[in-house]
Amino acid sequence: MDWLLDAKTIFIALGIGHLFTLILISAYWHDHTKEVTVKAFFLAKCAQTATWFLQAFRGEIPDLLSISLANSILFIGASFEILAIMSLQKELRPATRKIYFIVTLLSILGFQLIVLLYNKENWRVAYSSFITAAIVFPVYRLVVVKAHTLLMKIMGYLYLFVIASSLVRGTVALLVPAKSSLFTPGIFQTIAFLALYIVMILGNTGFILLLKEKADQELIRLASYDDLTGTLNRRTFTSHAVQYLNDYAKRKQPLSYMLFDIDWFKAINDTYGHNAGDQVLQDLTARIKQILGPDDLFVRYGGDEFGILLPGKDEARSNEVAQQIKETLNGPMSSHLPMKYTISMGVLTVVPEPRTLPETLYTSCDKALYMAKNNGRNGWYRGRVEEPGTQVQPID
Image 1 (cartoon, rainbow, N blue to C red):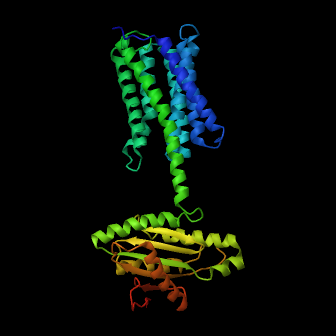
Image 2: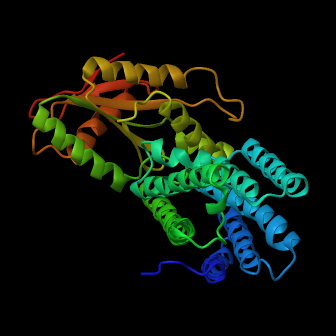
Image 3: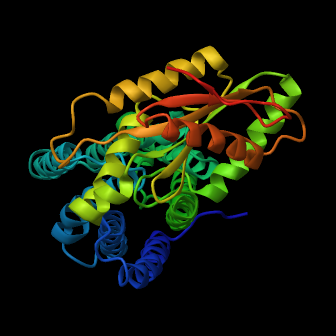
């Protein structure tokens, strides 16, 4: 069976594939013109579309276009695609853009020097292959970063395949020059074309799916967090708190809960304005977040009322956290705030039962918060989960 493929047909197919991706990205970009990620990927597809169409007409148009210009555009397209992936992962820095600009410029200059001084096809192939591998290399982080999703890791392995195949092709070009050209019929040409086609389909589709995944994650974030303070909203907090209560009920281990609000917050809003009140809320949550651990849950119930669930922390450890919060807020005032502020806090620790609910903790801790306010504010008091005869006990 003859598996040989026509080079011109494959190049046109690759160009058309990137062209259709370009059309889809254009439709998406119409409503997202400010997104660097989409812009970079759009430019990458423009470059790759032009590259493959120029390659398709090699021999019918000047080599200046089909070789020099096509490979130069290929480097530009590869750089833009990697910048788009890095931007999607929020790892793109201004310094990275400058580095890629310099690397791309030097890559183009190096290729043109080879064309001018030693215009052998195997040298051009080897150079282009090794440069492509170097440009794509930073995307290996898609695989090694544990926090990345399965889709990100699959995309990472796809780019690792691109790196490996580029290195193999570059090595073959140096060792066996006759088999390195995509225009030379043979099994190497067939494998190379199939690899290019698979990478095009999976890469373009994968990027669209990554955009969708990013949008889904943003929707989840908006549905789960308070816009002003970045803390959990009540619904999300309750959902996570129920899981913790169930887990610690099975372990028969303690967890602690804090409920607090800002002293005289209404007076702050009335005196300094609601913008100042918002700044106080943001300052408060920013300071407290620095104290909390990765498993702690921080919720804004509404207005100036907040809660914190401290899984695994007993009375002694929750006392330490409460004292840290008090000392932090009583420290130097932030320069952008027009006033100092304090909070009153209720604290309780419990080994939950299977029937213990977040509402139970809230109700009991609310009584401790009430006592904190009645005893002069700017303090914290420890309560107990409500039982007959239970009293709220003050703590310094």
